[in-house]
Length: 142
Image 1 (tube, rainbow, N blue to C red):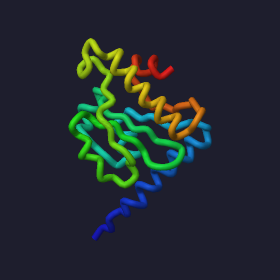
Image 2 (cartoon, helix red, strand yellow):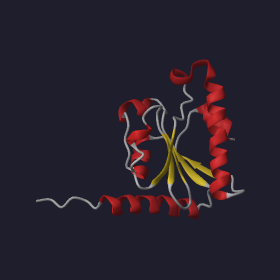
Image 3 (cartoon, rainbow, N blue to C red):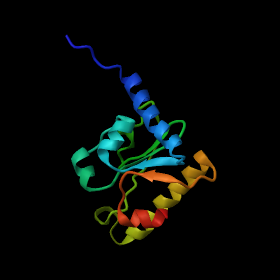
Image 4 (cartoon, rainbow, N blue to C red):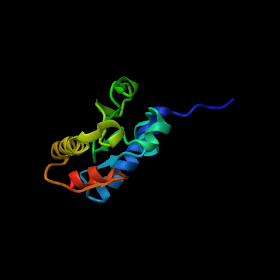
């Protein structure tokens, strides 16, 4: 038969590769929205096809330590058990389908959370790597 993969070792390896690149490029962290990248980093999934079209999840990978995952509302329990995810928060929804006329405020609130996490994890470093992001999110993070 087949030998199953060593999931703890695989997860540690993936996180170490990401964190090595974060440090090499002198970033305060890496912000992921792409569902495949979030899966690679955290080993978590949630509505992969829907999330591919609606940025309702995000992940902050710090240069050291555990990740923070923002999951779609009421879905936090799906990833809370993962050993390299240190915290699961409510969704990072700032796209019109989810936040409607409050998209601007939702993006600003999320950007404020990211700024706080960056200060907590990396001090004064404001350099953030991002895989992809909705335009309004980019504007609020600047």
